[in-house]
Length: 280
Image (cartoon, rainbow, N blue to C red; front, side):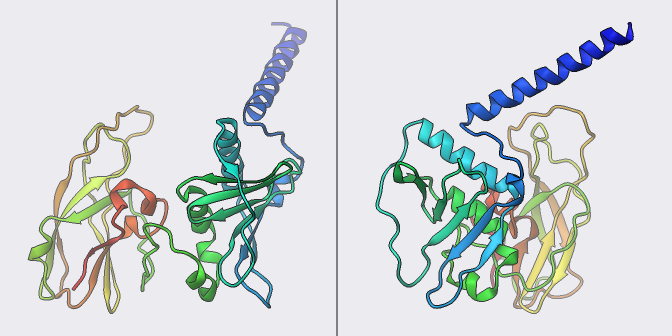
């Protein structure tokens, strides 16, 4: 192949990629603005008489919000609404963008208020946007601010010891017989399920990792990683029975599944009841 022909092919591929990228942006009614990724902000509209907390928001999370709004508006969803009134207490998470085409968004526990050029529109989203941003900000907010925010469903559990590090692919567990657990228990019978798609098979469960606190026992049940590059179906994986030797009596401690203690696991269906698997 001649050097000239090689250059023509490379240029043609680059032009094609640019056209496809522009089509994708237009499909979502968005046009990229230089530097936009660096300036997304969230104001926690909460206080009166003192400044509200203002934090940066990860570009990936911010982009999800405006794509969600664009899709809902394109589908004809939402209705004109009065802006959320001022006053005492939580008034929303106000998300702004350096892109002038992005209207400010006020995220509420059950809806999104879009402050566009055509007025305020309210989109009922069941709290998806609020939960997504709440999770992104949680570890960066002061305790008094977190205490004043409406909780998500399920709520972030209070964890009283550092979470154990991952040792494999994520798995989640339930007690085989919760009624059999007492403060005197020195072992626990668990049923462990692989989280990722695996054709219905959980496979090997790695040795569970325990993290003890005065009033909690956190258990992490990772599973052996799958070989890469193999497509798999998602019919729901089987549960594998595992017995955990505690080495001492459980005592008056709650049992928590580490996978369900923090996002993204906390938002999965298997964690719909939260992370606590047993309470004394």
